[in-house]
Image 1 (cartoon, rainbow over the protein chains, first blue to last red):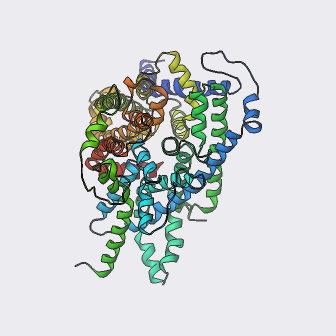
Image 2 (image 1 turned 90 degrees about the vertical axis):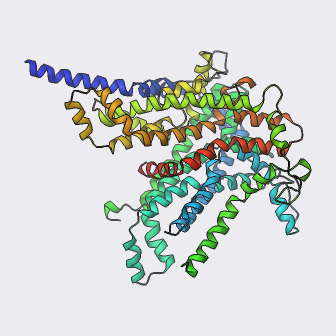
Image 3 (image 1 turned 135 degrees about the vertical axis):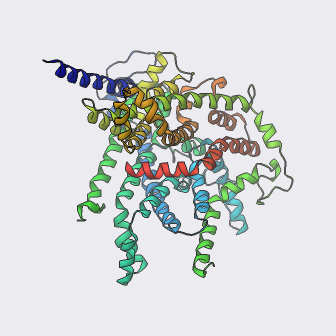
Length: 304
Length: 279
């Protein structure tokens, strides 16, 4: 090997080493805080591990118990699925509608956008959960307003039929980040498409279904996946506003996981729950992606 | 001249914005109401008072809210600093240096972006507990120092996208002048990265401020409590909820986010829109 070659190899080596040095914080974090914990969690899920006690092998014990002998677990899955399937479509529909309202070049648009976005900014906080638990309580804002119309209110949070609805409403109220993403997507649709359609005499409704929706479908898919994943994991609002009650009507999966792992320290069982949860979320996300082949329109493929 | 059509348009938007923001307006008014007026339907307080703030601030025995704010700001300062340092280094590595398996590792970054935290929650807790880190701020700061934590992988992605948009000629010129890779990172990329780092800092602040679940599981002693935990304790500590005080304290707790939002609105909205879309 001559000197030039040596230098070349040395340069390549040193660049590779430098690259790994630069990403080393993440790499270390990935192995220590993601990969290794996942392996451990998988192992724990087959044991009866309780914190401070050494784990004992159970085989599929936790998993069979979950599905045959734990109505609370099944209940929490049902509540979570119900919550996701109402909150996500409502939130996205609302976000799209408002994004279309705001997609005009008029004076003062940024003021409206700021006001409408504001609830989403403070959304996930304990503070807003406190506000919400008062608004929908017995003496809360909603019943005061209904009082003006001489309608007798009830405690919306204390009633198992409406409690989950108040949580859905809370997250729908915070449609801001989806709206901002829709707005950016709407701005990228070429105006010529609408002009051509108008010239051909297309009405607003058919322009919406034939231009806006197809052109926006990749963004809709993105928002749908993002919101579904987020919605599955909702914790703070349910923990503060309804505490899972009344009669477990808002007892979401994340609440149950919290109770098992950190109130009862049943780490083995909680790990098994987390894996079932991951599979469920993965399955739902995969379903969304699979269905997207039918409804997402990609311009670069020239449509389908 | 305002046409009739745009006037109608503004009216619709004003009405809609009003409905959206009404709960917040009502909240703003409620903090000045004495308890006796809480259940009345009036928006504005008849006998406005500032007591809710003064009493609420000291309502929890042992510590005033000053303590909880200092805790939270301290925690977030640590998290912000480590996030900025480690994420910018990692993003530079992914965006500008070619090394074996780079695409493989970056694909893993994208996969972990989707991974729900619940799966690693239990073993992480067991590990941190073993290290004696429970009831300290290390379970928040260490993951961020390793480019993880709340939003960590998202920030890597965001910064990589931004660095890829910077002209490569600058790097090449610096290389010709004998600049090392670290020199390119430190002297060229980092200064240009400021707007993206500002976006990262804003999101990092907001998300950590609201990371109630993380604070709930790792912080047990009131001395270490953050503002969110203190509010939760406030709800639990009284048998009949003092709504006025609770509302006042809740309002103060969203002030940092609100102030940040109004100062950096453009950055925030563009951050969501552009990085969100590229995902």
